[in-house]
Image 1 (tube, rainbow, N blue to C red):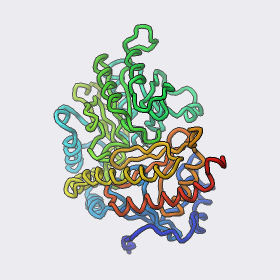
Image 2: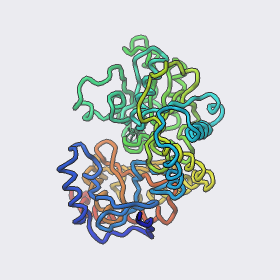
Image 3: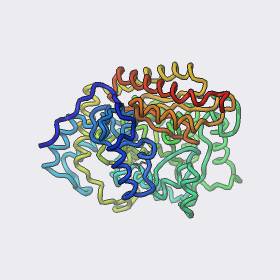
Image 4: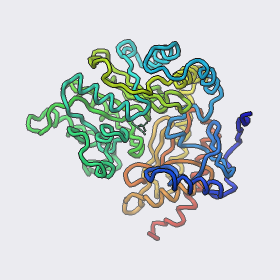
Length: 460
Ligand SMILES: Cc1ncc(COP(=O)(O)O)c(C=O)c1O
């Protein structure tokens, strides 16, 4: 008999993590699994089960999950209606290659219908291998095949995945240095990260000079760069530290790519599926991309699926141009359809906007009390809190790590990221309510109070 579903009333951490049972699992994992594993190093728990916005570890600790599977669990863990949809589909068909099926047909229609007009009728969908990185590879491939050009422009600080092509367009230098001879032809341009202006300027809101550099390079007959196939960008650099692009920057990227007939790929793997309060973040920037990459939140419950949405006029690639065995996850399609029904019925996107405003406001209050918080930024339910030394402005990496550990002890799971790992990242489920937001920020405030004591400006 299966266990009854857990019901949690709030976070509770009686046993400092890692508790003894977690430790056994972590030790075994270290022995049996790859050294390249990541999350357990910063979040040292073994998970027993989860429900909604909560995770329970094997020692009985319950945490508010403000990481939500790296932004995957848009409706939280084990949403009951999505579980029913998956269970019903389980007895019908699980794996369908890329053959049409009723549930896939419904998923495809519903996903295209989430695009704003006039894109809705102009776009087609391609099912990729079931990860964001695979869909990024597909987007690059489609752009190169269509334009017959090899170059790709990407932005400093961006993250697009860990496969060869996706890593080539990712900013993280250390990750690339470990794997020589990556995909050639990638040109990096500065992104509107105004707090740490990529051009070293002091203004915190200009967002103009960095885009001028791309504009001039595309127009300059001596820039050294042949016309690229595409520009790929995130509208909020998630792994890059929740850096929200300035609207003028984005508008001008769209303008200059149109002017030079360069395709614009918007990577919505992290920002899509309602994360920012609209289905796609690009809607809030008033632009129409040529290719959109979506993955994480598509199934609503963490089942893997990834797609490209692209303008029909780009549908030039031949049969089999981007194949992959696992492109027909019928369970993900079933839960994806159910998720859209729940999102519409329960007005989840309005909740994202409302809770995002609450979260942003509470974080701003926290920032007003802590000199170590250099900036709070976000949109909808993707937020980042960048920490820097109050006097020197240097990245406060050690403090960010200490706050993350103290938050865990206080019952809050969050991630750190960005350059120097000095940004606290919050990505709660889209269904998170005000009580949970308030509880999370209270846990974060306590974590700051604990960690801050060791990081007094005068002491460092
Ligand atoms: C913007 C963006 N693109 C691509 C990816 C890669 O997705 P995956 O880890 O599913 O390959 C990620 C993952 O975090 C992402 O945030």
